[in-house]
Image 1: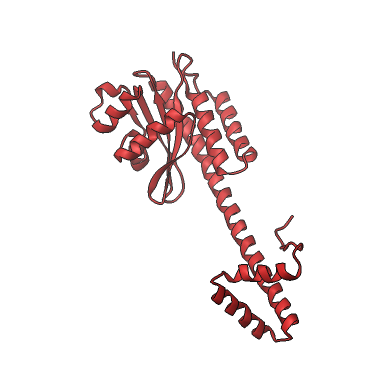
Image 2 (image 1 turned 30 degrees about the horizontal axis):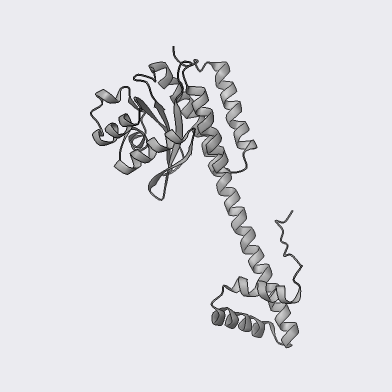
Length: 249
């Protein structure tokens, strides 16, 4: 018996659940983990459980960012070690790649032998189409030959399309958060330096330029970042005063 068909009503439920994941998870890592777990529960046929994970390319190297089980991660790590396999092929070509029975598969012989020894009998790699040069894939492993039917593949591809849309949104939000964090850090650094310059001007009765020179010399002689020296100056005169910026809530 195949997994439950992904009808229009279920599609709406899945889309709603994926949107909830974006809203409810605190960061990209938690989102990926929820996605892998949800994938496994949704795509598993009634009589058997499949293992799912999500692979993305980071710094030109594939990385498993989340998995539904330790076994799924182990299968991906084997694939990375051999440098090729169905899931990496799916990412590289942008097409779904299926191994219905590892005992009859002739591609990637070393990898196939390794996963067969681990009890995996069928594998499916579904590409997740992201933006620009970013690539990802949903990887599905079954311990049964032909454990992923044609209907299951169609469901996985449809689910992959929905997941990719949500994933693109999550990655955009992550980039925006990172940009905000970087700007906040830069503003705090600038604030600390400005305050430290004021402290030095008051202590040494000197000009702003002279105070900046003193701060830079201290940074150089102590081999410390300018921001850290500034923070130390502030700490020396007001140890319990936190820095605040526009971003502080």
